[in-house]
Length: 284
Image (cartoon, rainbow, N blue to C red; front, side, top):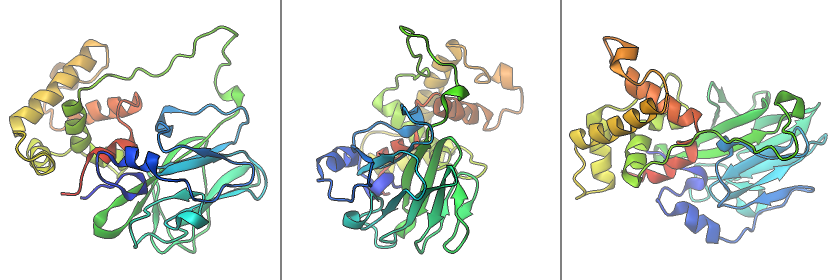
């Protein structure tokens, strides 16, 4: 599968290129633009008003507070939408969809020709809009040549949903593990089906991972043994830090894919790996 990060640029320098691109899209009334260099929404947001929507693609995004009838448009036609998605992919509709606030909730409608893929289902054109839950939701549009374009959405919740820090308290972010460039690339390839939020994902095999890495980085000596060594090194690091279910003793026989499955899920739960990391995967 060819994976494409938000906005359609598959190169490792895509986000830096997008950051230099002029923001020529529409600005929603009362909205605030999000720069292309904004971090992944999977790591959370800070919003003073509950029900504020954040939407982010590779080329940037927009945040907009709640209000009956407010909406954010996303699609390929940069001048006419608030969030540009799949700008260089003619299979993505000029206006692929919209986020609309009504009856106290944000709703997603599909106005394009392609279905929108949620983590748990597809939304087709002509179907009733789907409500967004509080928190993080990744939306995918599959374009030409199996490219996957990502739109991250986050809806802030009420302050009663989590403890309110007292003045002077330090906010504790999730534990994010530091990976080397080669470790991160190998794990993104190994776990790309999870980052794409495919239903019932499984890790790639050592052979599949090494083969794709060799195509992405020819001449760098990627082999099954090298991939296995790098992944096991990261797994050992997390296990020593107290993450459970990362050893054969904990999982039991037969192990199968369980160790890599638990590792990828742990890295995503900690936001060490997030869907925008798919930018590291180039078209094979």
